[in-house]
Amino acid sequence: MTLLSSLCSSPSIPSSSFPLPSNCNSFSNLKSQIQSTASTNIFTQKIDTSLLTIAESFYEDELWAAASLRVRSFHQFRPDTFGVQDHTRYMAEREFEALKERVSGKRISFRRVSCINASLPLSHIDTLSYDLCSSCKFSANGEDRIVVGTLDLNQCLSLPDEIVGVKPEVIGDDITRAYLSNVCVAEELHRNGLGYALLEKSKLVAQDWGITDLYVHVAVDNEPAKKLYIKSGFVYESDEPAWQARFLDRPRRLLLWTGLSRT
Image (cartoon, rainbow, N blue to C red; front, side, top):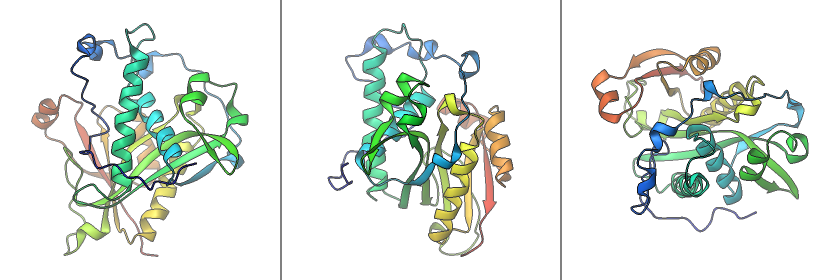
């Protein structure tokens, strides 16, 4: 296990959008080949939550596992897509380098960023999915574990290309405002309460940082995510202008807020 000590200095890259290599013209129409998660037939497995660990990540192999899960969750392609494995690896590498940069504190305008992961022992889910177990594995205290859920907690005034929260309306709001991003759970383990548990852990970490106002963005048509955030205490604050969503070529987003008490 390698502690995050050799920190990268490459420009930060939005984790939701990765530029393609100049020699990968065959990927120019990959967007049309993305599969909708709703259209895939994924078998979900109930888990023993007593084996679940949710904690901040500081080690490179666990950050790599988290980066791989994010690419796996946010970029799904047909198995027969040409060069899909190489492209998936490329995207994971880019997210891994960007994640290291954010966590190391080298991201301009971010006071602090933490990667929070949920993980299970490999032995508990090794029959579930070879792809999940091979791409999202790391070792901790001599045990092989799988990152099954992940998110970032960002202490900052705003996130790039996202609508901005207005709370708190006081001087020093960059210290007490934070945003969640890259929230995802392995699709094979949906409906196990992992997303809710991740959100609750992020609130505890945020309170330790002195955060009083926590935000998250969600696509207007992502009903499962909206239900999850509402269950966790988030409420509507504002929504993205239609022109901005069209300009960024993505679904329009809502901005949700929840208040945190000081510890």
